[in-house]
Length: 428
Ligand code: GLU
Image 1 (cartoon, rainbow, N blue to C red):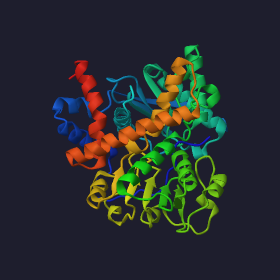
Image 2 (cartoon, rainbow, N blue to C red):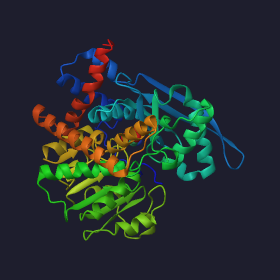
Image 3 (spheres, rainbow, N blue to C red):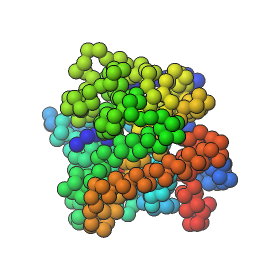
Image 4 (cartoon, rainbow, N blue to C red):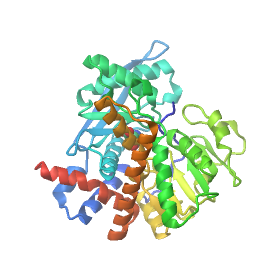
């Protein structure tokens, strides 16, 4: 059981740069709609979620005291189908971040052609400082607070930063108690015995690995022996490091929230995986660490940011050595940095494509729950690869056709379905 993503502590603040994830997302949505020939009304519809619920709920702590936590659930757009997206448990969660994340989910589902709109949830808390029992009470209380607006045909949650299959199991149990019927399709990323899908836990990383293969083919880079840096050692980062290590690439750098390890001869990923904790922390066990910031600028061919937002900014973008960047985290690269990297000839696979393996297999999980018939891992992986290869090719072709960077191309592909669905419904 792994948490969906881990986080480094470094946040690079550059005064002149827009680090506000919501407004920068809105700018890309606007540009994408303009390229597609939509007018201002469509932008007004898609620039913000249709619904955002803020909840406050008390949780009894182990020492008998009560703490009141704040949570959110944003539903960006349900023109295509029910909304879908993870729940993050993190001290930096705020309303704008959750709104932006819900928009990214819509775009992600649009690129993969899933019958969903985007949703996202978050609880302001630090699960690293809470006991197992406290996290259980918190997870259950959050579900009670948002239960009216979620459900298998309304809005389907999943894991995100610092949440995992155990949180999903508690949330499913709470929901089933409330509704008084078995409802495995209410949430995805569940343990296998509760209706989870084979291959879901490693799906985000598997998707990133497929994008790396596709990007390497475009760049004519031989993956065997290539140098890979993975920032973040949570669910996505740790599985990805393992996949790359096993495939013969050299994983020269990894990091967690507290620091980074770099060795140009390659790190022993199996050993690091054995020693990480459930939040992906491992560097504390080593003396010769460098910072996350240094890691990003270290020598490599492929860089995978698999942690949190705003890690590659206009301040450090020019110093990035990689020729391929695949975003496993949501929002690790700012708009200004995206432009610098694009001009430098770096092939950047944006989050909405790079990490979409997670939601794609979540969709498979929901389909299996709905039909009550479960697939083999091979079947899941084959279908995932099919969708991701097609998605990559479409986004890459769109970037060439419109002569834009891969992020804008991904948004052009991703918003199209939503906009078309909204038009058919007569909303705009
Ligand atoms: N939290 C993941 C994401 O950001 C997965 C969402 C899902 O599976 O619904 O894509």
